[in-house]
Length: 168
Image (cartoon, rainbow, N blue to C red; front, side):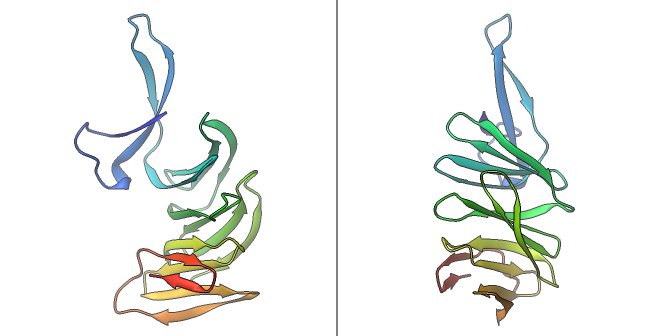
């Protein structure tokens, strides 16, 4: 598969990218390609890629072969995806939910709520979550506690986490 701009122009924002699957060559020697739904989020680490498409479709593939690992549907368009540094955990943000899953089979580990809506998510190597919200709040997990950590002047559209350090 190849990630290409939908219109052949320079790489646009993620929302207009399409994931294309190359299949067996056609009779004239060109590759046949089949576009997926619109990508809403994408995350990868060595060995795994997680792709969110359309309205809640989520799937993982093994890299570099792009072999399917799992598919599942979340109830709402996925706004953000992240993998932990090892590639063992994946977190998805959608509507007012943050869902932590195992990257090998897609099984849910736990789910948290962000009342104002999730824009960005992160997970550290220990599986602790962080989320940025539409209401300018940063939500973070410390051991078994989940809460509003701080408020910014504007919505939180990007976030990263490494242990106790959260960058927004």
